Amino acid sequence: MDRLTLQSPAKLNLVLDVLGKRPDGFHELRTVFERISLADTITLTRNKSDKISIRCAHPHVPLSSKNLVFKAAALLRQDFSISEGLDINIIKNIPVAAGLAGGSSNAAAVLSGLNRLWQLGLGTQELAGYASRIGSDVTFFLYDTSYALGTGRGELIRQLDIKTKLWHLLVTPRVKMYTADVFTRLKLNLTNKKDNVNILLPFLRKGDLVRLAGSLSNDLEPAILSLRPDFVYLKRKLLDAGAAGVCFSGSGPSIFALAESQKHALSLRAKFDRRYTQAFVVSTL
Ligand code: ATP
Image (tube, rainbow, N blue to C red; front, side, top):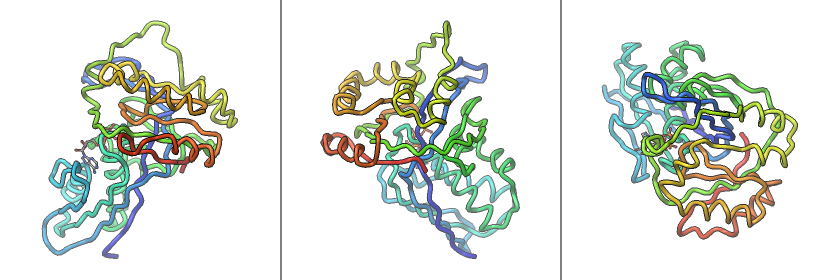
């Protein structure tokens, strides 16, 4: 096999609790990940050179060693003394630096893909070891699961056996928001901390959309809004348009609405002006 094409989906965080700051500088998180149908396409092609090269038409995706797919391929190539080269082609559909972990998902796809292409024989736990060295969100995408609980920096994954399929309108303002800037503005309030994960999970399991809508939460929201106070209007617009619940994903700026059905999500999308935002109808994958 010389070539492999893979889908690389995005994620949403239905809950994102920040539990505290750790001595290593990272934050301790507790989050519910949802894999969604918005995806990039990655093609891996073996070549006879000794280089890893990246192609991607999106202007904000680095083509250098800064790209997370380069890091993934370089780690495996070095550890397994692979001498041949690799071309990585990325078709980018997931907005960049948007709280949807597109780069992390791409890196996970490359780890899984190279495990097959180079016949490395690695199990999920071993791949997870590489994933956590690349980024906190990479590990989730190694698991074939719609939902997972993430703890630690987000890299400790427990798959959740939940069958509920959700529909969302996902709205991404055309601005980049860097995770580091958002965490810098975070004011931790650790008193009376609610366990938002365990509040949400029973409603998600039952598919109780009304209560699920009321239990979506993201502790980074005040920090996101302190950077962009105008995003309050985006939230209000979604609620006024009839969304059941609205929440930021990750460190923003993507914001998603819980819709009752695909039809409902499509009707919400019609209210958004594409000049300022990208709006996608997505479902649980
Ligand atoms: P996270 O919350 O994990 O930072 P995000 O969804 O906010 O994820 P990404 O789309 O993963 O952000 O991109 C964050 C930055 O990573 C971008 O500014 C981009 O320069 C860099 N990057 C590196 N590799 C990739 C990739 N394969 N796809 C997109 N961005 C990448």
